[in-house]
Image (cartoon, rainbow, N blue to C red):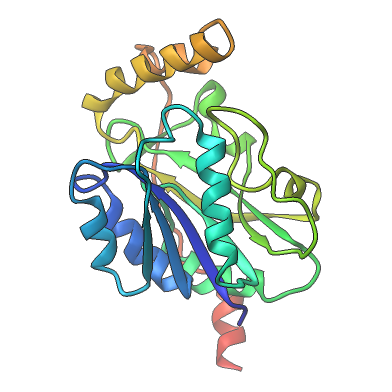
Length: 243
């Protein structure tokens, strides 16, 4: 199987989802490179509790002001490990369980350099996901893994927020659109919604001069939810592994 390195930006994640995210990533990656964005809690200690994690500490917060700079710095730290594939998740995202069985086989091929998955936003709980408007995961895929291609540029779009997970040049590579899902827990706690709405509202006004529709929909009273259903690994995979 290819050499896989995961990249993970973290900031003040001690009491949230970091431990479970690291546990799942440790099943998928040989090394996890975490960039701590000047946390003021025990995030670094949580990272160091996993033997696969290499953690780097920033001196001052970058995520609130220039996400692209942080992700580009993290990318170069990952490349020092000479990975064949790179996984990119946030500290509140987790591959579903069946990815442990299936994702390695998606990376053990030569036709595609990018793997994209649907990301499901858990809303107000871990039992349901939001599916209305711009939150509908069935209509969108996000790159979550790339094969490292030597010689292509490592530059990110110059955006202080929503800059993507990988260098811009990888967006033009052959992409496999996978049925595997990523669970995003950033909205799973109802008490976080207003705080995050105010953050994104301020960022929208400073970056684009208006509040985006998706930001306003955070505090909408009318949302469509679907129950989260676990899915077993594909039957053909079990037969393949037995051969």
